[in-house]
Structure formats: C-alpha cells, structure tokens
Image (cartoon, rainbow, N blue to C red):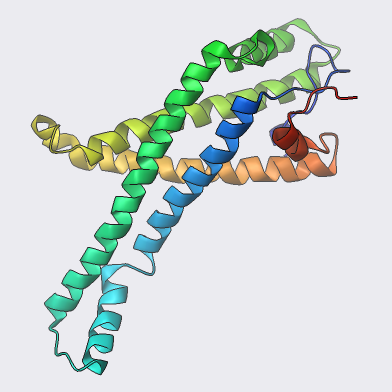
Length: 225
C-alpha cells in the first residue's frame, strides 16, 4: 500500500517540497467536484430513481392525491425523472470535457519542472539511474503511472460520453452505440477504483512521510518561509 501514497518531496531534490501552481490546484478541486457530481447522478438513477423502484412510489402517491394512474403512466413519470437526472449527468460530462481540455492546454504553460510529462520522465529516469534511492524512485514512478492511467480514463470517458450525448450526429455509427456505452460504463468503475486508491494513498501519506499533502494542494506547496 505504501507505493500509492502521493509524494510530497521532489525525487531528484529531496530537500524540496513539490510546488503546485494555482491553475493546477483549481483544476484538481473543480475536477473532483465535477466527477463527484457525475458519479452521484449515476448512483441516483441506478438506485433511488430506478424505474422499478420509483414507479410504485409514484403510483401510490398519485392515488393518495385522488388520481388513478396506470402502471404504464407511473413508469412514464419515473422515466421522465430519470431522464432529467441524465440531462444533469450530460452537463457534468460537458464540464469534464472542458476540464480535460483545460488540463491539456495547461500542460503547455506549466513551469517546466511542474509539467506532468517531465515529472513522469524524471521518475522513469531516476528509477533506471539510481540504486541508492531505488525504493523512493519506484514509489514515484508507480504514483505517476497511476495518474497516467487516470488521465487516459478521463480521455476515454469524455470521448465515449460525447459520442453518446451526440449520438444523433453519429447516426452512421449507431451499430457501435452499445459497445461505446459499455466502455463508458466500465471506465466509470475504473475511475471509482482510482478514487479509492487515491484517497487511501492520501490518507496513508498524511499519517506517514507525506503529512500535509492535502494542505499543499490547497495552498500551493513548495518551500515557503
């Protein structure tokens, strides 16, 4: 479990605390809110607002109000409620797409030593070059690879999500809709796994060598007087 802890210090300069730009910190926290909101809509529609669960409740409440709805009418109302939640899910998806684009653009404008690609290359170089700090280098490399997978998952989720959101535009490819939807749903579970691993790593880090890593992602980290 130790290899999933976020690292607080730079691997090539262990005396330095990693800095985080204000743009990256903003992206991190807004991204967290958007992903949480998106997952919440999925949770609502797959549990509380699932047609077979909510339709009987709707029918009962309407009967109490003096109406005499049929099962099909109650199901239609349930589907309408679910569609409203999916509409919100789509908006969260647009937000996630915008944030991913922002993160890609940000990579070009970050300070050199804060670029993700550069830190990944540094972690790989340190892993191959040093034996003295092999454990720390392995730790750093694993963390960077986990984040690389996360970014790839975001890219796949955004791409498949936009395909589903604009499926009418992609009518010629309607035959692959089911496969695209399956990939989108599967990636959601992988994102949930990443969130669990990330939170576990942060929790362990705060209790061990990376104490203050959450504070660093709020106030910027780095070596402050």
